[in-house]
Image 1 (cartoon, rainbow, N blue to C red):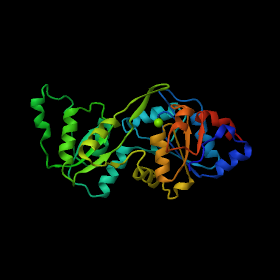
Image 2 (cartoon, helix red, strand yellow):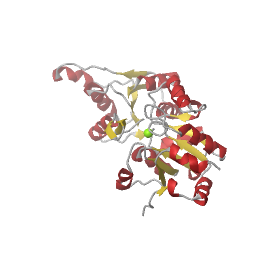
Image 3 (cartoon, protein in one colour):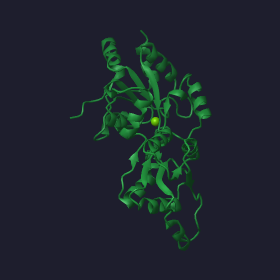
Image 4 (cartoon, rainbow, N blue to C red):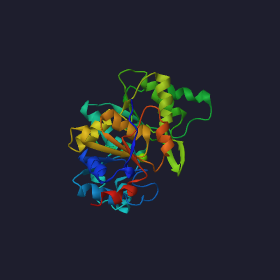
Length: 298
Ligand SMILES: [Mg+2]
């Protein structure tokens, strides 16, 4: 039995106090919650008020594509000064995971270039590509060759994903000891308001289907990723964390897997989208972070 999500904007003063008393820490998604292309009004003030009410604030995004400079600029534009140092993204979690298992082979990356940079900054050596394949199927046989140096295949938002890369991933993953790791698994993204577009996660699905292997999910909604974010924040009790996001599968899904309380902001999806989801429901919802701001001023 799934409880109906509570609209925070319907709570009276007592209800808001009870809501605030139900958690000590806030973990927030970034894209679609704090900004779309530009900052969403009131987001920075929302986090300031959360801190004023004694909460710690951390950010947990599936977006490993942005550089530190880009994240710094986005946070700053939203009025948040300590965003990047409190941010967890899949590329860092994947690197830490591989370190924890003493991984010492090469990584085949179907990822964006920033994720490769992050993995290399941990001392791992990466292979990737080709970004452009041959013109004829007859030449594709070259992409079916195994490469014994590869010990892990990592997927994470590669906008240049193509058939040669997928062939290579499938060939390497035929060896059961090769790690299959997935960062951002998003199958949809919001590229224009009110419209969901396909995202790179659909390509990992092809490999899952073809290899009959399940990747280690080190991005939302994977529990490993939720627990990694907690560890980074120095926290151990998921029930005292409120996770805020704009996507049901990724954000509320992560909250459910890890044991967080969840708040869905309807900045990307409608209330109907939320209610129509068959298995995942947030505990709370609100129009946006900015819409909650007036209720927190006491
Ligand atoms: Mg989002």
